[in-house]
Image (cartoon, rainbow, N blue to C red; front, side):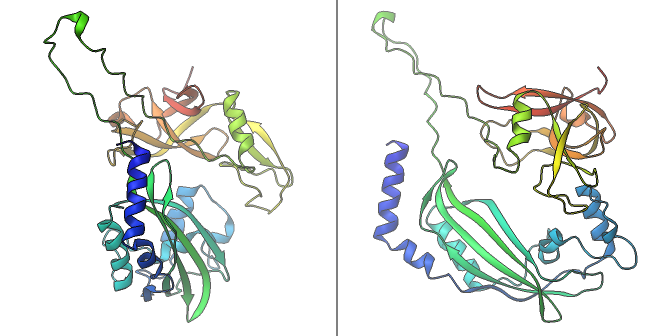
Length: 333
């Protein structure tokens, strides 16, 4: 049975047992009610966030500090110990999806709206609702359903912000079976031709939009371009439509020299993913220009990567369509 046939059979099965109607019935039901943030808004978490993101805006320091708006979700996350206030409806929804074979999950996008700044000492409460469950969708990862939740974050009963989070619960796309090894029992002239090799898995494509297309045009030309604000001269990477320092939408670019150091890194062991071969090192690279970006560290075993290690930019051709900026350990030419 081909992948298309499997998808068609699954779609027919879902329709016949009324799965989508049951999934859609969860829309509007509470996923968490009167949840309590595990920590009040606090300066240490703000400092760690700003250091990791390379954001040194003065509004996030000192006695009158506020939390970066994009930290909104951080105050409601369950951490390693997990969430304790999820509703039975949330658990039932995911059990239903798991039971239908949609056992994998990937986050796809989020939207945030900020209504008031959060300050150290604020006690966070939140309510989360299952906003929608999509009809069955087919993606490159596999087929499944998009689940959108909306979380209203409150301080003292006042809504401070709203966070919408969308995930895909999916059944992974089938992979062609590996050809079984056989022993030749017939003369060579009568044996069937060997099976064609399975095509190598392709790396995921970057999401290119009007805000970052110039960055990827630069990569294709073997140039790493950094945005520069035309009003305050602040540099920014990754590319954004406006300046985080002064709010200006006017900018040009400067080309990175290619020199950098490993500011931080992780070694990826799990989960396995087609076209990747774990373990491998992913670094937060601080460029000589002062901005940071995430990329692979190559040219050294994954367990030899160290913070402060000098690295040098190079461009890796992944396939006939895609090139990526990576950083080779060693730094100096």
